Image 1 (cartoon, one colour):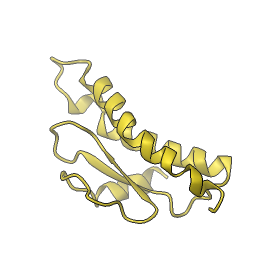
Image 2: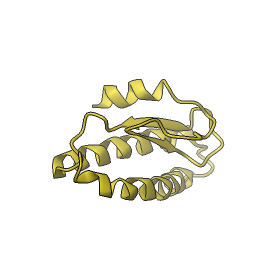
Image 3: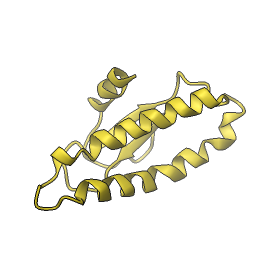
Image 4: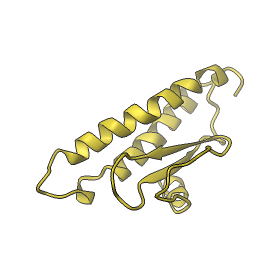
Length: 106
C-alpha cells in the first residue's frame, strides 16, 4: 500500500486540482511547499466494507503524514507540521464524508 501511495505521489503537481479523477481523492496541504498534494486511489477498495473504509482512511493518513512531515518545515516553527496536518485533514474530511452514500454501492 505504501508503494501505491508513493507511486501515486509522482503523479501530483503543486497546483490545486480542479477536478478529481474518478475513484481518487486529491489530498492537498495548504502550505507553500512544492509537491504539496498526493493522489489517493480507492478504485481497488470495497468501500461497502469496514475493511475497505479502513484501508482508504490509512491511505489518506499516509498521504497527510507524508505531506506534513516535520522534516519539510523549518525548525524555527515546530508547530507548522501539526498545523499542516490539522488543516489537511479538515480539507479532505468533507470529501471522505461525501463518499458515504457510495459505500453501499461499492
